[in-house]
Amino acid sequence: MRLRTRLRRLRRRLRKLRRTLRRLRRRLRRLRRRQKRLREEAEEAEEEAEEAEEAEEEAEEAEEEAEEEAEEAEEEAEEAEESEEAEEEAEEAEEEAEESEEAEEEADEAEEAEEAEEEAKEAAVPASSRSGGGRQSCLPPLPSRLCPGLLLVFRPACPSPTARPPPRGRHHCIQGSSWVEGGRQELPRQEEGIQVVVIDSSQGRVLSHASFRNSVLQGIPWQLFNHVAAIPDR
Image 1 (cartoon, rainbow, N blue to C red):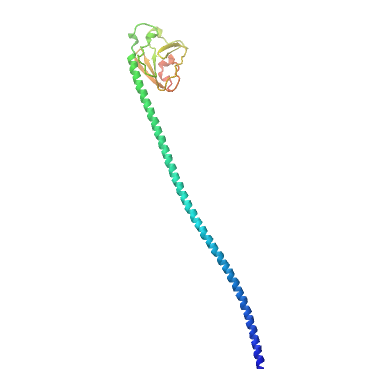
Image 2 (spheres, rainbow, N blue to C red):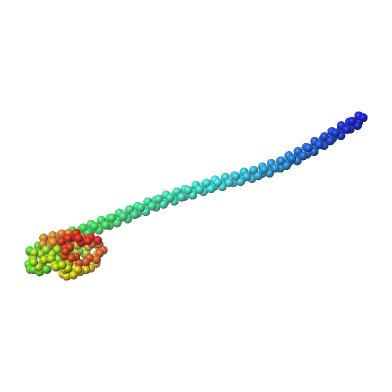
């Protein structure tokens, strides 16, 4: 009896141990699967971490390149600004040079006008001091030496009755160094800076002078002799 009882107890205990063993085996398999999953997740996480590190390095490189490009762009902008400033300075220098040339031309013209005025004053004599009548007696003698580009225009102001204003439609003008009577005459093209000097032959003094630049001077009509300001200054 005792042996049978003990045998049954041993059999029950064996069954329990077998059940426990099966349960432990199942648990071990679950743990192994979990361990495998965790290992895979760890590897994936490690790969993601490596990718994140690579992305961070690429971001740093991109940031460095952006900084370098920004510095280059800033340098180019500074160079462009300096180039613009240099161009403005060059334009200002060119304008100053042009103004200096214009001032020099004006000074030359003024000097030529003064010389012409002096020669005209020397050449002009009152009409009462000259003998003879007619149109030629109204003109003071021309200077022996005319300055280059100098056109002398004499206002007819003779006291002689023959020096009355011409009829309507007729003009008196001077072409070169001689009088022309009749229709409007064209003067040859003159050089730049020509000085037109208007002289009152009755008083022997210069009335006015005007500068003509790059223009074809036509014969100046008699009517404009009393209105010197109406002669265009082109």
